[in-house]
Amino acid sequence: MTIPQPPVKLKGVGDSLWITMDASLPAETLKQELCKPFERLRHLAVNARVVLDPGESQADDALIEDLRAFLQQRFQVGRVSGPPKARITPAADGQKAAETGNNAQNAWLHHSDDTLVIAGRVRSGQKVEARKHLVILGDLNPGAEAIAGGDIIILGSLLGTAAAGQPANENAIVLGLDLRPTQIQIAGYVAAGASSSSGKKPEFASLKDNQIVMADYLKDNIFKRLAWPEIR
Amino acid sequence: MDGKVIVVTSGKGGVGKTTVTASIGAALAIQGKRVAVVDMDIGLRNLDVVMGLENRIVFNVVDVVQKKCKLKQAAIKDRKIDNLFLIPASQSDDKSIIKPENMVWLCNKLRREYDFALLDCPAGIEQGFKNAIEAADEALVVCTPEVSSVRDADRVIGLLYAHSITPKLIVNRIVPKLVEKGDMLSHVDVVDVLSIDLVGLVEMDDAVVVSSNTGNPIVQQKDSKAGKAFNRIAMRLDGHPDLPVEDPMAHDSFWKKIGKKLGRKKQE
Image 1 (cartoon, rainbow over the protein chains, first blue to last red):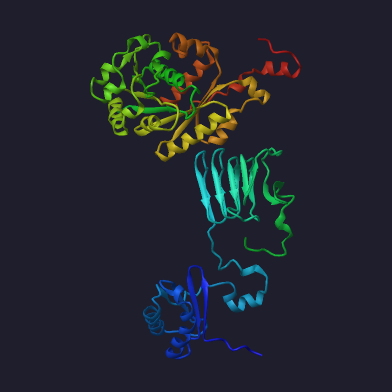
Image 2 (tube, each protein chain N blue to C red):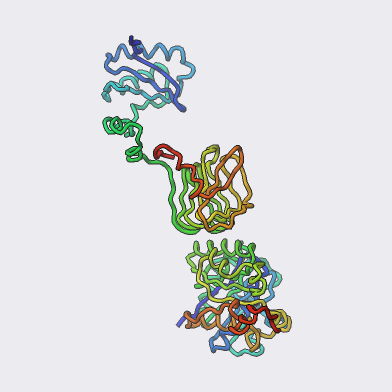
């Protein structure tokens, strides 16, 4: 049994109104259908941003333009934009994804994010910030700060302050080949670097039962247990 | 040929910038160079006291910059060393009285007059520091084997690099006995963190205190370890960059080491 799709759906996405519509219908029908939700939301529609998404049906620019003029005139909406450019996702890679199933073999082929990789020595008073993961090929000196939304990986000595998973990613880790930090923060948790380790071996800090714990990376690698490689 | 302007800095106070400036200046002058040591610590001058020239000051660096006198009039000749001149700081002014553009002018003048000009930078990284590094060609970063000093030196090194100056490192006041016991950072640790070129390791030496109180240069005292170290630093700065850096930890002779192994007390 299939439920008939309404020709026009409206939902709030971010700061805009997202309209999913069936563009194969004639423009007049679409306008009538658009009136239904917009009449009820008249007070919200003024100056609102609207995105017209034809979904899987094809919409030509003329139709989008026509509807834009209509909405702006009738309901005084703000900016109206067309469908967003389709992003290539691993799932949209159709056949390949189907072939490999959940195997992440190809998952990162189309993956891009805000990981920051830098080389060099971060000195006292200097601050490095990354929106997601942060990789430093070099040392983080005492008095220096590294802040990341995801993991912090220092391929060198970590002697300064490292704040991973900011503001609230509790899965983030801090990894260093020589981990002797002044302070480590993961999400909202803080630990002073009173570590028992002497450094000079790869260690990582992670959050366990609301406490930051340090462990030998080669012995207690938490990622060894993962069934297959996944994107962090 | 134009001379070189070298700024001596550290970030932290009390690590021996002034002593290093006076000593290296004296050593370079003894090696036959025309040297000016300039006190940039305006408002808190003391290079003149360390050199024993406090009673000869008439004009100072602020007068030179404000063109109240000529550079030569402000330069005080050392009592003992012929080619050594001191340009003292003003004691009554503020560091903001000199602007970076004044320093460019002053350094150009110094380069024309002298083979080496050593600028004794004030502690901190504010206006006084910015003035001192503004037109310098090279920088010597003085650091003691203490965590606080290393951190400040690291900050200063970052700022110097940002100013396109490649700094060199002097580790001052090493106490080999404490390092041996593990109670003091070794110079290896310091260099490891700061990772810049090392030009000298200076041992803690009581004679330095005496010499700066009496105004006699430490480099003229032949039996002083610190004096020897400063002489070698001066040689490295002046055309012998490959002169090996002497490690104060390796002072023990072969026979003393054997003695220690056998449990004999060190004879002092």
